[in-house]
Amino acid sequence: MNGDSKPILVIGGGIAGMTAAVEIAEVGYNVILVEKEAYIGGRVLRMHRYFPKMCPPTCGFEINVKRIRRNPRITIHTLATVEKISGKAGAFRTTVRVRPRFVTGTQPIDEAVAEKMTSVRDNDFNYGMDKTKALYLPHDMAYPSVQVLDRECLSDADTQALSEVCASGAIDMEMSEKELEIDVGAIVVATGWQPYDATKLDTLGFGQYPNVITNVMMERLAANGGPTAGEILRPSDGNKPENVAFVQCAGSRDENHLPYCSAVCCMASLKHARYLREKNETSKATLFYIDIRTVGRLEKFYYDMLEDENVSYIKGKVAKINEVAESRNLILDVEDTLSGENLHEEFDMVVLATGMVPNTADVKIPFELNYDEYGFVDGATDVDGIYAVGCAKRPCDVTRATKDATAVALKAIQCLDGGE
Image (tube, rainbow, N blue to C red; front, side, top):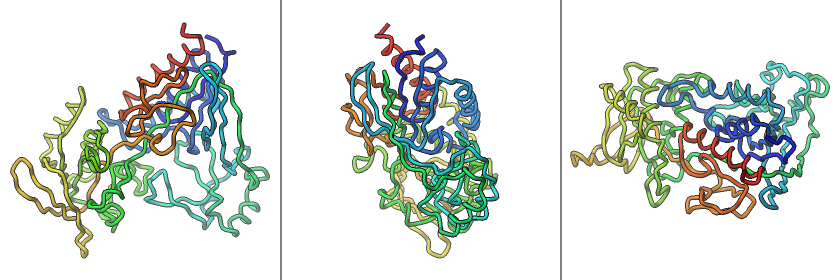
């Protein structure tokens, strides 16, 4: 243990980054955690429940936040990105850009202040399915628990009102970007993932038909803090869907989109069908699949779902989705490969199981690293002192990401100690 050595930089504050940070800090090493969003927790926090136990992600998140709060060895920079990295293992120089929050956090701001504002923005936490005010808390359990002010959508009237209503020093309209030069001994790349852009699936109607949504949107519909307060409702009219299609491998295992399997989508769709059945006992779910892949102990979750007579499974890839103009229902064209029958079936709503894309596919780490053909950081890279973890390296679920993060934490510590 050497708390006087250079800190370890963790890029990304999702479940893998948080796990690596607390594991490193709790054995006595300093950590700098950099997160591009205004809060830590990553995409896991946007889920309604984990599989297979179906417990909320806030349980594990609360534990990690408690560990972070009580550990002075962890420094967190949110709204921050790593712009430059130079040097070598044991002696990296990094430049971190921190965007302004415009809320200082030194004075409390009553929620009623935001409610009176007229300026609104798309709620990215809920994948744009609802709005927040320009002054907002990203979500109920946000850490840091400090509001953010979106200056770009703030009206002149709201700007004036904030200056009159908020306590002196609570909001700083002149706050600007900062650049931090930080020397670190090792770097953990935990930059996470994003869902595949479903608008590229031009035959499946996403972005064209309101009742075609994605799997990550389904998570938010089911969540109490989501746009519908936990009710699964059709975007077009707010009605409960009685008959929902779940389209597996939407763009995945497809040479024109994502050639690989993301490994978690089958379990996610089974979970979503369970959400639907739990929240509306008269509803019916149909899963259209190529293969249903469940790993190890997760197989039981699948077998349990097979017992539900209101959940059907059709082996076949959906070729086309069209909308019925009057009802806004969806017609799916698909070949049932087991029966050889061409199906033309109508549903109230469709959920596309889009795959996982590494964030490094779009934004590379500013250092010479190896990437595979899909943008994942190559786990076999020869760069000493820089270690990829979780979905920056390959598609994986929460359990694998946390185990991977613990292993990488040990590697980073060993790097500081010269491989001892």
